[in-house]
Length: 248
Ligand code: NDP
Image (cartoon, rainbow, N blue to C red):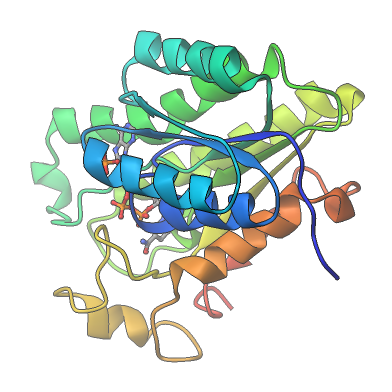
């Protein structure tokens, strides 16, 4: 089956890691792509150049997902420059990988985790939905930690990703009458800057899944591609877990 996409895709946090791979994959299947980033303009521009090399249009927008005004302004700019967003991928995410003991979790860490992973995703979806055409797609990037936490130190992140599940099922109901589907992909350990396969807890994480390895960003992008495709038109409010069986 060859998947062909059409229209404009917005990938938040598309300058690196999973988001950059999603941006390239959606472009390779026919979407014009906008990526947001927080600080890595150069890497975002590289991703945009890769999208253009595939013959698609691209825009990069600096927008901290924790900044409500920046999020709304970014969506407005994407719609102005590329047209209404048909595929939204809420990917921008934050995790404090130092995993401090519960008593030492700073309030600022808790707020930042929730602001980026939950509030920013809600506000982006709300802004995009205003002009999203019927039949559009929203894919939220959650985490397998939303349902099972294999070690201490992850409570703020796990609760933020559990909220992404609520966001997904709630939006599926909000937008269903417009034939817009809303789903989430829940990755396990994926080799990126956030969670490198040579990081301090990498061996522990490899031991959690059935394959004994880290996943690749492409393995998340292909799941997003399916949910963004016409073939997934009767799939909404659900989770596609891509964790190598870590939660099995
Ligand atoms: P990376 O840290 O490698 O990349 C994060 C991306 O998000 C970058 O493009 C970064 O932009 C952007 N970003 C970070 N903070 C903000 C912000 N405040 N506003 C806008 N953009 C921001 O992360 P991953 O690729 O690993 O993670 C992508 C998603 O996948 C996240 O939602 C994460 O929680 C989720 N996930 C990842 C797993 C993993 O093992 N890697 C496992 C489960 C879920 P910039 O380059 O400008 O900093």
